[in-house]
Structure formats: C-alpha cells, structure tokens
Amino acid sequence: MVSVWTVCAGEPPLEDLSPFAKELHARWEVGQNAPAQRRNEDNRSCHRLGASIRYFSIPDCIYRRHPITNEIMYPSEASLNGPLQPGDFQVIRTLQDEIRQSLPPNAILVCPLGLGHHVDHQLTRHAAEGLNHPLWYYADYPYVLRDNAQLELMEQEGWVSQVFPISVEGLAAWMDSISTHGSQISTFWESELAMRQAVTDYLYWNDGIRLWRKPAS
Image (cartoon, rainbow, N blue to C red; front, side, top):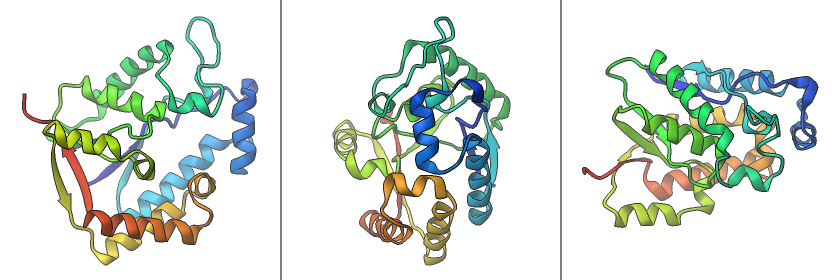
C-alpha cells in the first residue's frame, strides 16, 4: 500500500499571519483557511491515485516563527528557496519523532531531493536522512525542470538510479491528481492544459519515473 505523507500540513496561527502569507492566500484564492483547503486537495489527489494519506503537524514555512524570537523565518518569496533558518532545526527533530512513530519497520521510504531548494523540501530531506532508514529519493517536480544540474552532479558522484515505467492509466491518474490542487496550479503553470502537457513531456523524457539512491559508502 502506498501512502503519501504531507509533512507541512499543520495549522498556522491565523490571527498572526505575515504580510507575505496574506499575499499568498490572496493569490491562491483560499481565504484564511489555506491549510484546510490544501488538505482537502490532498485528499482528492490521493483518492485519485489510490493512496492513503498521512498529515504531520508542522505548519508550512510561510507560517513558521523562530521558537525564541517569534520572528517570521520565511517572510518573502526569495526566502522560500534559500537556506534553512536555525529556528527550523528543532522542527526537524520534531518531524523525525513523528516519522519514527508512523514508519512501519519494512517500509520503503521515498523522500525529496530538495531540487529547487524549497525550504520545506530541504527540511523533509534533513529529517529523513537522520532516521537511519534506507532511503530512495525522488526529483521534486516541477522544480526539477529548473534545476537539472544537481541530477547531473549526482550521476558523477555515483548515485544509483532506477526508472519505474508508468502506464497510460498511471499517467492519467498522475495528471488528474495534480489537477485537484487548484490552489497551486497557477504557481507553476499557465493553465491546467499546460500542466498536463508538461507532465506528459516530463514522463516521456524520463521513460517513466526515476528514483535515486546514494552510492554505497
């Protein structure tokens, strides 16, 4: 059974949103309850894929504040793709504890590479790598379309990859599942039609979905 784990699904302090968070809510057209709408989108997406879903308690990066100073750690578009802030290292430990409690002993864990350097993807990878559990890695789509150089470097470093073929039905399910995330389509594509063409092109470019493993030490 495949399970999709949404790491940053926690509730934000809605009475104390940053100007940047309010700006994003307006762009997404979700009102004040963005996390709840995103979870609804996740549910529809995973239902289309035939996967179960698990939500974790950590809020999205645009809501997170430093645990001591209470300052917003990611107050701008540029900060979303920069370095992790020191205040997030406690968040990583919290996430590791939550994953350990949920992870079946023989589970195959697949985590993001962090292509594009989105801080939530970086945080997830840091947490997963601290679990002492075998890992596969996936390329963060659609960020990989803008950051393919890291994959080339990984190949030079001896990372092992494997392509998993995707059927016509699987491709349709993948595109349909993306389309349920209505609040995010405009961030990456001009339209749903453009999304479907981009996903199809990406799949045929790779002959399927490619996953990576670190080289043996």
